[in-house]
Image (cartoon, rainbow, N blue to C red):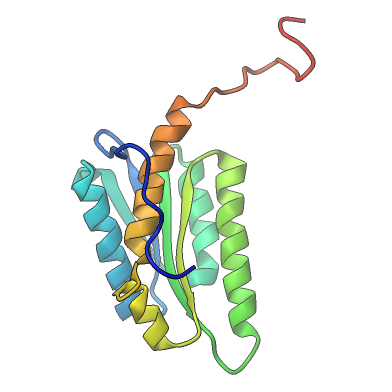
Length: 171
């Protein structure tokens, strides 16, 4: 996907919500820019600084493990995962990028806590910078906006009552 994320429906609101941000240190100058974009988006939508916890991990591969721990803590309304994986000369890129994406999705599906993907996967360092506040936007900001929108959406969606199967009501 190139360019900015699609426009959102309704204004996402961060007031009274808690957000966890998991950031990879690998390619730290770039991930700092992603983090700055995410924090600005959260603040612009009413999230208080005291309601945003930032946790640093060694690299993108470690993001899901820490995100899962944070999601299970029950302290957060949403998690934002930020990192950078740049293609090199070996298949390492594919393994790290694939498993980071799969793991982040698994956190959201297993816990029900909105967990967004702000991991830049790029062919070059220049491409990564373009996606960290450069000419194609800031993926950190976009991941934060997605988290804000998901928090509101999840609050409005029905939850299946415990003990009720798919077959019928009150049986």
